[in-house]
Image (cartoon, rainbow, N blue to C red):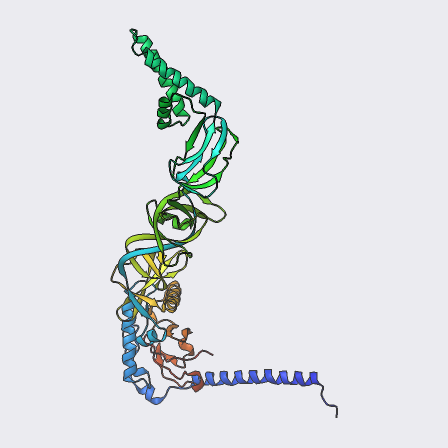
Length: 494
């Protein structure tokens, strides 16, 4: 006898599997047809039928239904009736279900809303306290007193001495004008006296325009002899940042001889993002810490907000001003900067209580009886895990703080089913006359929805009233309970 090959065995096994499925389906179909066609029991047929109001199923037509289940069904019906008076999307959860999904609550409150904006800054010199030293007359430098960069100098200290032929000749003209004015001051002619005075004043003004001080002019008047050189003095107190003054060098008014910076105050530049710009303004308080000085905090203010935006980084430059009395802060140092933002009194809620889809912000209001009502709100800035509520909530309202994602899914699914029922012209009050019944279960394992038909519920329809009939035990769920609206037993869909 020839042994079957592997392919033959596979085909035979597959055919037997298909045959088994078909046979099982026929057996199930046979039992279901037999159950539908079986006559009603004598006890059930002998029992008189009672007319009940529309939408309510008599408890006497439900064999095996206990009094406690009838009470539960009545409570569910009452809850459904009260839910009709609430906003669309309102859902009801039992205390046990709330505990399973870890629902917690919080109260909307009004409080002082303050925030700290943190950024990194770089220290620079105060540009308003930088002085560039130039001469106003050409000449040669003979002696340099300020001879290195970085030196701290006080206002009025000598910088260098300059020899200029033009300056010497002007001093000589001034001495001549001074002598003429003294000689002609007693002349009988007023025009002569006025001319001598005008010449002296014009020569003195020319010396002052060349930065010759009043003390040097008085020295010139007392000595009566023109000085060969003139000493130039520092216009401000500060540090020498650059130097181009050297002995025997020829200089002109174009030559930048010294750059002197007063570092008693410094500027700090920070960058803020464009969405933070509305909260930063001139005069706003600022604080600063440096890693070089642990535990020390510097206090300053916002001096200027620049009007342009960097298109690459999407940031705006802000200039801060800080005092630097001991010159501890050096240019080009990095610092951690904090800007205090005060929003005033605001209505706030926790961030986790808000379901933010990008275009809508929704919270769930906790109502009595385990009901949760969705409400759309408008929020502002977020800080420290809290949203500022601009509209939609009032202080004292109780909202869901956690577990709102599961409540939202229940609300959305319920609203979708209500829309579908409305499209089919169905309402909970008419489910006793409709062919199908909608059943909703809310529990931690998930949200199940089943669309059941009385034709598949294991009961026969006689004269428009349900009659008790035998049902297959493997089609009935282990936790079958009456439905409050229709009186049918729950069955698992197969």
